[in-house]
Image (cartoon, rainbow, N blue to C red; front, side, top):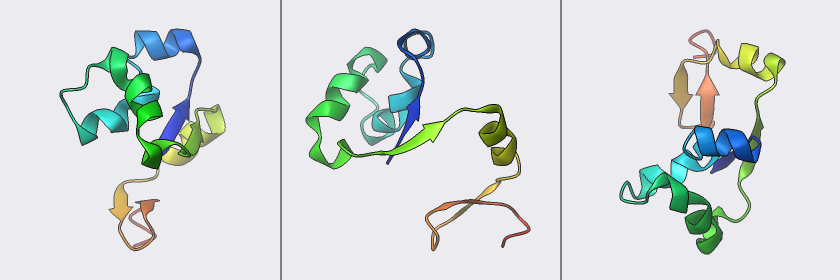
Length: 79
């Protein structure tokens, strides 16, 4: 599980995008309840962190495939 570090205003405007993966666990959870839900589920207490810096965004543009063995996104070249 990962968590995207964004400020509170961006969380609100984006429908809590930093918690969006929790919505995929249960799509009936509305965006405004996602932080509360994440806090209530022990398995989600220590998520990995994702920062949206210009460099990290640029590096992500080359990632296209999910590698299940590595448990991460990879490029076509890496496969």
